Image (tube, rainbow, N blue to C red):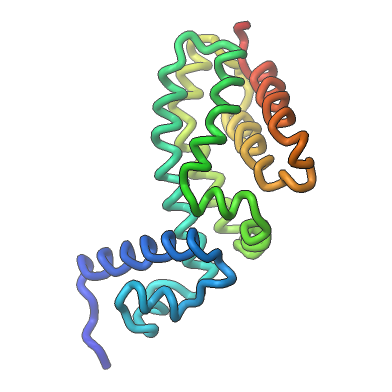
Length: 201
């Protein structure tokens, strides 16, 4: 039996596996990247991998959550800097922020392909709920401030965040929408969401 890892070693190994997976998934996609590829590149034993993750899919959930954190913070900072909050300003932000998501090779690859939709359906209800709650809590302080200032509607905060999340989910459906219509669809949907949420023109 191998020795137990210290808390510090566990944190280092976990971060190394996630970082390696982000690189390999981004380069080759989920289907073409095996656990063997990941452990070899990370320099760990295969048994060690299963000490941290049950499967490649469970690793992907952690990878997606990590990438979401990476892009969400600067997006929220930019959103908070919009003063005053107007319908056109929020619409422009929503539309332009799609390009921020695409600066991450893995997010761009998965959110424009079939792998992500396939994996999304394999996430457990608990995992999907966890992602939703994390987004709600990230947006909550800003939405409360807007509501207190009378800048957006006084609807349930969870509902407001879900409207915004639904907008970003459109990137998963570019093929169904049609590439030739996709950008205009994004722009019009951004305007529709903003017109419904924001009080000021």
